[in-house]
Amino acid sequence: MTTISPQVLKLLTETAAKEVELATEALAKAMKQATEAQQKLDMLIEYRRDYLNNLSKTLERGMSAEAHQNFHHFLAKLDQAVAGQKDVLVSVQYHVTVQKQLWQECQRKKLSYEVLATRKNKQLHHVALKKEQKEMDEFAMRASHKK
Image (cartoon, rainbow, N blue to C red; front, side, top):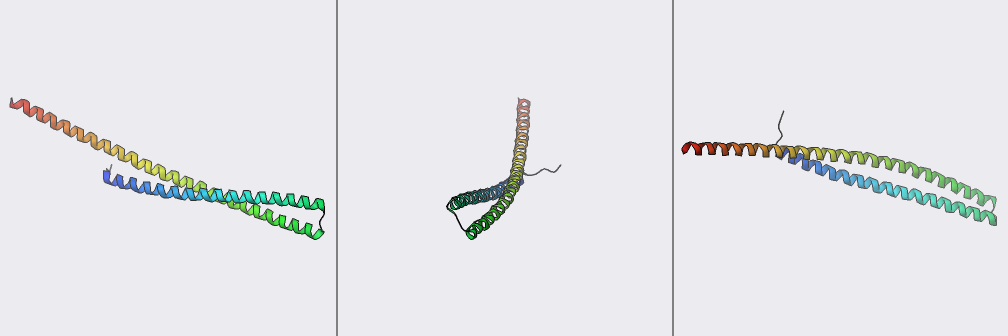
C-alpha cells in the first residue's frame, strides 16, 4: 500500500474544501433561481385569478362579444404563461437537485480526506511515541549498565 504524505493530504483537503465552497455557491444560486421561479409562478397565478374576478364583475355589468372574446384570448395567453412558468420551475428544481447532489459529493470527498489526514496524523504520532519510548528504554538500559 502506498503511503500518502501529510502534505499531500493537506493539499487534497484544501482543494476539496474549495470545491465544497464552489458547490455551495452553485447550490445557493440554483436555490435562488428556484425561489424566483416559484414567486413568478405565484404572481402569474394570482394575476390570472384577479383577471378572472375582473371578468366576472365585467360580465355582471354586461360586455360586448368582442370584449368577451378578448378576455378569453388574454386568459388563454395567461394560461400559456402559467404552463411555461411551471415548466421553468420544474427545470430549475431539477437543477437544484443536481447541485445538491454535487454539493453532497464534494462534502463526502472533503470528509474522506479529513478522515485520512486524521488517521495519518495519529499514525505519525503513534510512530513518534514508539520511537521516543524506544530511545527512553535504550537510555535507561545504558544508564543501568554504567552503574
